[in-house]
Image 1 (cartoon, rainbow, N blue to C red):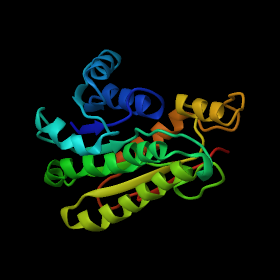
Image 2: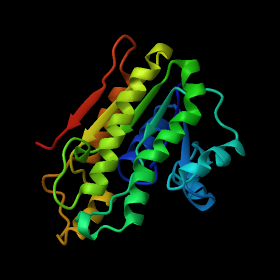
Image 3: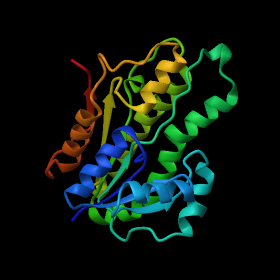
Length: 228
């Protein structure tokens, strides 16, 4: 039975991945930003364990996790959590740069660092749910895209560093997906939300599970997912 630690399980792609992993009998540990969120996730996903750690405060993750019981075994770490705040460089205050870099890049890097000992023991897997913005950007997306371009670099560097320990590192780059996060993006763009032309989040979840389940001997390093 595999053990997975998942961020971003509260909604969207992360919630679907979590439900499907539990349904097939895997063990799941969910990272929540605070105790209240942890209780909500435990009710939403019965059978899952929770840990409290705020990705928006990467410097406190080590302290937070040191006061909790980490799983003795860990087969995968799946980074799904993310935030987005659109705006031109001329109009984006430093706090929005810092929050997106923290949650989308520095937090995942620190969480990965803290869990590498468990992942090395199992020759496990780290999977980053990135974005099409991690491959290209456009006007109004600079801060978010910078965090996602950095996440791509983190994955590539980690893969090279951890190959000797047998850790596989993969990234999925979904284009716009029908999730609550995307609904908020539409609001920021001043557009009425519609799912037309968006990826079904269940398709993204299916792709993530396929990456996790790939037999040893190969790895899916970069998967780009686009709507038809």
